[in-house]
Amino acid sequence: MESLSGLDAAFLAAETDTMPLNVGGILVFERGTLSEVESYDRILRVFASRIHLLPHFRKKVVNAPFGLVQPYWVDDPSFSLSNHIHLVYPSEEVALNQVLEFAGLILAERFDRARPLWDLFVLPRVEGGRFVLIAKLHHAIIDGISGMEALESLFDLSQESDLATHPVAHIPESPPSRIEVAAMTLFGLTDHTLMALSGGASALKKLPDTFAESFSGHNFNQAEEMRVRTSRTGASGSISSAREVVAHEMDLKKLSVIAKRHGV
Image (cartoon, rainbow, N blue to C red; front, side, top):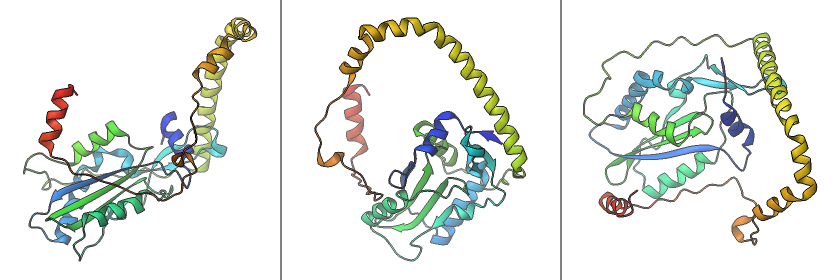
């Protein structure tokens, strides 16, 4: 059992029905010669052989009592890859616009917090002789950098693979009891209290200067200068839970020319 970082806990706390904090990716591949079932089975075997490189993919979130400290990561005792890797449209070829529409629908849905916060959808037959993987992960377990690292651990740049090797054995830890969660929360709360007292002592030393600046109006003037005033537009109203994914194709060579020209 381990605590979420403050930032990851904030991603969980900030989520609402109209603002699901999901990270998504659409990965397009050449279809090859494998059947739909064979493709799905191969993906399952790849994940089984490498999921030990992504430990949080086997963990779920448990909240601390009364939300006193950050939630915890704990092993999901009923974890199964088949509950997270889904075969969709197995018997029909779909167009790319259908892939984008499906991605928008699933990315708009919030995760069930009682299970690990990720899913992978396999679309084995997409127009143009391709197949597609749609990854959906909660921002609490992944961000842009760690997302690239996760992809790097799952895919190869050569034809060689390690599917012949046996998956790394994993025995999930027993779920913590309420007493264990309460005890860890108490220790965490004590640490937070000590840190707050330490920070409070430092803040007290600065109070005279802070009051002096406040009475002089210095802080207020700074705040006024930093305020951003914008006119209301059609895009600044309330949002719904609906999401739409839009894609555009561009030649990689053209992107390379642009990158070299601008030094990025």
